[in-house]
Amino acid sequence: DFLYDYGCEILFETARFWEDLGAYIPLKGNKFCINCVTGPDEYTALVDNNAYTNYMAKMNLEYAYDIANKMKKEVPQKYQKVASKLNLKDEEIVAWKKAADNMYLPYSKELDIIPQDDSFLYKERITVDEIPEDQFPLLLHWHYLNIYRYQICKQPDVLLLMFLQREKFTKDELKKNYDYYEPITTHDSSLSPAIFSILANEIGYTDKAYKYFMMTARMDLDDYNDNVKDGIHAASMAGTWSAVVNGFGGMRVYTNELHFEPRLPKEWNLLSFNVRYKGRKINVKLTKENVVFALLEGEPIEIYYFDKKILLEKGENKVESLKN
Image (cartoon, rainbow, N blue to C red; front, side, top):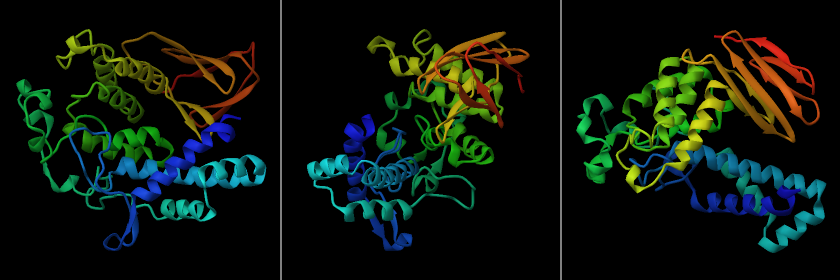
């Protein structure tokens, strides 16, 4: 088992890192805070309690705590081996749980959104529409110390968090945060449009979803950021796949179960893709009217189409009406 033989070392050492990096701050109600960090957004730097960072660190700490205790019960010899190698003490594991339970998670009651960090909402807000087109990308025209003064994002930060930990947030919370951050995101990063496409599709902003998908797909073809001379944007190409499968295909993994909430863009008549999951190969095909699920390889598996549980077995197509 990769996790017990190798992965646990990475998991435990990263948990150690987070517990060492943060501190319990009295003026934050003795919450565990992680200060002076930079999250995904490259137009905001060296901030306290970046929401993405704190949520991700909390997940890491919780998972490390759970796996350490699980290994103690299920594979005690393997646990003792890795604990000895890392000089891992029981009190450290307890400290991980304490840090996770007391992690400071930013929230604005006034705006009912997740602030990107402690200071973000206290900066002057400037929307993309207020900036002349010839000023983009900002990093080539504005000094970074000027950029840092504004509520302006190069790429999704809070929204990337909401994509990666989607099960922790309601659709209403997603919509409120999307509506707040979209007008102030420049997409000067090639990594940006794919996430906006995926989340717009889920919210029901279908035109925006397709617009951002095309930005992702044509990033280099249209030289969107005037920098293709420096090389291709390989991660953006991967984002194109994600925008198709996670966006239009609506694929998510929640609590180790495969979920689909697909929406076919009006510009397309057909979408078909394969995914591999837990030793299975599954084909998903969308038309204007239906979605068809087929298990191509592997043992039977249960998946979800919206809230409906579906059992997939080889040789049998499962057809459902496509929801708008």
